[in-house]
Image (cartoon, rainbow, N blue to C red; front, side, top):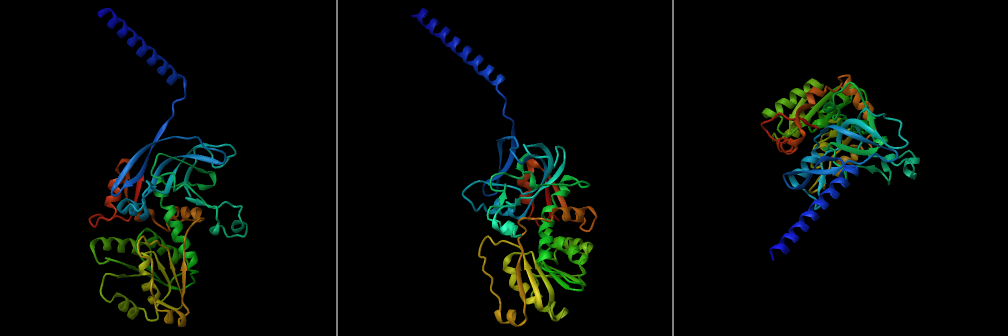
Length: 376
């Protein structure tokens, strides 16, 4: 019995040894798949770091080593409310370096610092060929399947916009500035216009120097809680960017007070606050005015306003949606030449592993946060 047991033990040892060396040699001979870390929301108030395989850039693509990613209000919404049954990738305000290029790509070259557009049109459909790329039915994006808050991103080369003269965290501001540029373009600003900007966030504050450069004679910034300590900081930033006056929308009768100070209303109203404030913007707009808004409601998206006043005052309500966001070169220029001072907007930087903390801190009343960049 003992001899039989010893024989079985020797056989087991031989099998383990053989299996180990076969596996080891196979691992040594086969190429090892490199992995990288990406940040996703899978549950409310929780960030999951995933390990994904680094893939090569395909034809017409580039692989970007991400260096920084801005935190957007959309990321906050996903983190705080997690509206989807499927995991959601975080981040779409990306800056990094071209690490490799796929077949057919000559520009941008390896080693180039780039910011990444999150949507590009196909360039071939009827809408694109009729100079309406914003109506493209085959628009391409990485946002559904890849996280911008990650170490790597593989995208079409056309999405990568070269830049220089800015650090990577600062360069992430280019994406929200393109949104501000689209708002101001849709507003068809004229010399000496009076402008009301609703919402003193990154986009609203970025609009201030843009409308000033277009010749606005008066810029008023409206926001909830501007009389608070946190609001005082935003007022100081807005003043530095060129704002002339402010109104706290938390104050009772704020609209009436504003109209008393500026009879006739405003020539242009730019709404970057939630869509439920559009009606306030319409009420404060003057004769033949334009009200431009950019924003998404994740709850009730209905807006009610007086149609008669809107009709007889010949007001116009215009939606802005910066997709595709063509303004990256201009946005980079505004950040570089100081028209939009990035130091005023980019108030906080967090390391990659503290993404969850950054998302938690974003809405804190104790921190004077305007914009956060995640450094990777």
